[in-house]
Image (cartoon, rainbow over all chains, first blue to last red; front, side):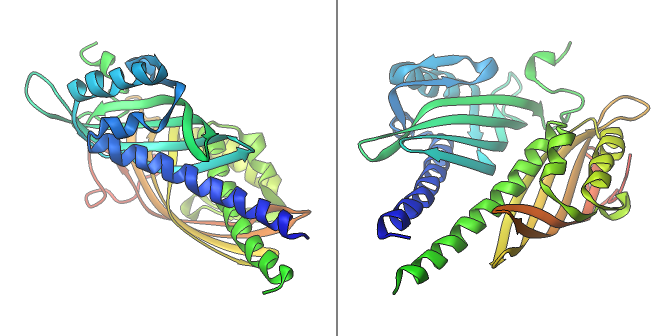
Length: 161
Length: 158
């Protein structure tokens, strides 16, 4: 066991920690509507896929989503991250998380409490020593009004159906 | 500080990470109904204790539990893990977690939304360099219909 081998093993642990921090920063900043900071977490040519909320390419496209779509959809959220699995290979990485998110969305009757649950399958790239999102892929399991629950209404378009 | 001492400290951190990853892999496989892959996460002579849902010895019995009991009782679930506390000693480890699970159970009037909260007190063993469950012990705190809540209806098996 050489010093170089040990350093490589420490680096692998550090990279996992940094990617979990990147993902947590994303969550805190989205919830604080610090959208410039959120966009700064993405690589220039990154892609973000948000299921029914659309897919967005490049920092400009992703900025449009966070500055124009998200603030018109929800007034408050807490992106709670769970079950991280991060796998690093050199300057690339993959990460899976669950999201369990209480939120309030705008409705004609005022703010409405909703539960959101889904899964992230993200990819990361290290650029100039800093990890960035190269792909953010979110798959909704449910986005349900608090008063209904995920068995009655899984996703908004089912409402009133 | 010798290289050997540093290596031992790095190994503990790697083992904690590997055990957490094993536990997260377990949850994703259960939630995706990948019953055959779940058995691989258990040592051959592992034991799984699921409270009122019974105890199972050996990885085959554990796989059968998922195929025959879990798949009947639940139509959907997300096993959300919290508060990991992993302690490693050589090729053995222990790990505690909370689980907060939204799920649906089939019922006479269709699927019903359920909250499940429980605590894991698991044991792990490293076999040929890979961590496996030697004991999975789950203690339910509540399984309650979404509309009722855990004070009115603490335990319900569907």
